[in-house]
Amino acid sequence: MVSDDEIDHGRRRFLTTATTVIGGIGAACVATPFVVSWLPSARAQALGAPIEIDISKLEPGAQMTVEWRGQPVWVINRTEQMLSTLDVLTEQLRDPNSDVEQQPEYAKNPHRSIKPEYFVAVGLCTHLGCVPTYRPDLGGIDAAWPGGFYCPCHGSKYDLAGRVYKGVPAPTNLPIPPHRYLNDDVILIGENSEAK
Image 1: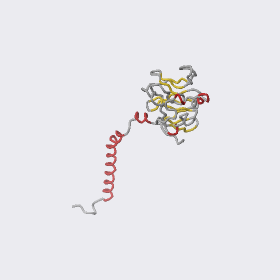
Image 2: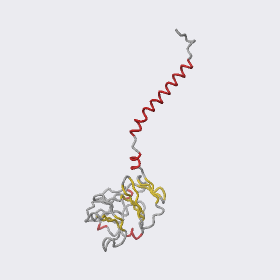
Image 3: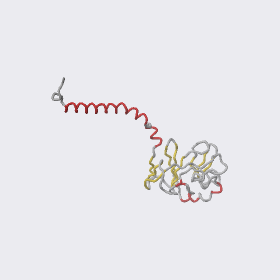
Image 4: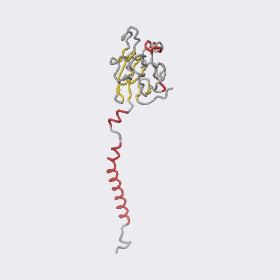
C-alpha cells in the first residue's frame, strides 16, 4: 500500500488538469463539424447579404443594374423633367398611391423613394417575372409615352416611379427593396432606412 508521503499531489493535479484540457480540446474538435454544418453556406449568406452600391458616377437620367438575392435591382438617377411627369399620370395608373404593399413605408410616396432623384426597384415585371426595359425617352412606346419601364413580353408598362398602368397584365407596382443611404454616394440594398 502507498502512503500519503509517497503520492506526488502536484503531479496528480497537473495530470488531472492536462487530461481535462486535452479532453475539452478533443470534444471541441469533434463538435466543430456538427456546429459548422448548421450554419448557412457561403452562397446562401451571399444571396441574402446586403450590398453596397456606389452611385457617385451615375449621371442624371442614367440607370445602373446590380444583383441582390438573385434579382436585378435598378438604381436610376431621375432628372427634374422625369420627376415632373409623376404627378401628371395618376389617373392612368392602377395603384398611384402605392396602397398595395410593394415598398417599405419610407418609400410610400409619389416618387416611391427616399430621395426623389434616386429610384431603387427590383427590376422584375410583376406579371410573370420578365425584365422590363428602361425607356426614359419621350414618345418611345407611343406618342403619349412620358418615359418609364416597358415589358416587351406581354406589354406591361410602369411609370418612372415603377407604378403600373391600368389595362396591362401586370397586377402591381414594381417592388422596392429595403435600402438606405450610407452617405450621399453609397446606397446599401438589403437594410431598411430610418427615414419616414
